[in-house]
Image (cartoon, rainbow, N blue to C red):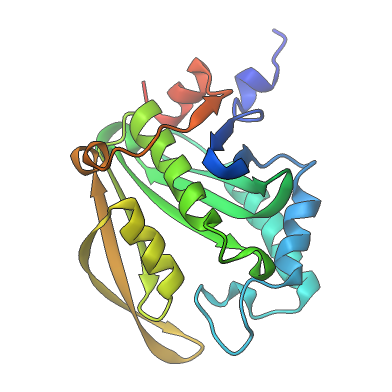
Length: 218
């Protein structure tokens, strides 16, 4: 038997194209150095923590953490628990990462999203475009029934993206970040809500039958 990437890991080549010159490419090793470099250059002001504490390290360690995250989640991907990491490009330049993940998708039909943008690339509408692109992949191409996300209450940019996309509030959570109590908002989008928003579908290339099967979509 001769096996290729289409059999072993059929996501290399998966690409989502959104309006405004925004493109999401499944992260392969050729894209990793550019993605790690964006993270190393900074994701947020050091005095504020909108994410989790993985960014509270040196520039080099932050870049390495991106590589390790991609390798770890890629290696662990299965129909029971998967995470797809996309490099986000705007006008051909890598500017951040967008993740789409699920646990037991064949049964739950629910996905979750997470993302970050390089600090110098924020404020141009890219965050909304990349979120809508993975939601289109989930709802329009994988058969998702719902999507969830969340953000700390003081992360106004992430809140705005969720609101623009059309999510509804779905409760709150409390976490500890940098040794302090942080409150987060949870959001949920149903398939019916997604359809009601009338967002344009992303152009999806490279989603194969074997890829859908591995994600539990078929």
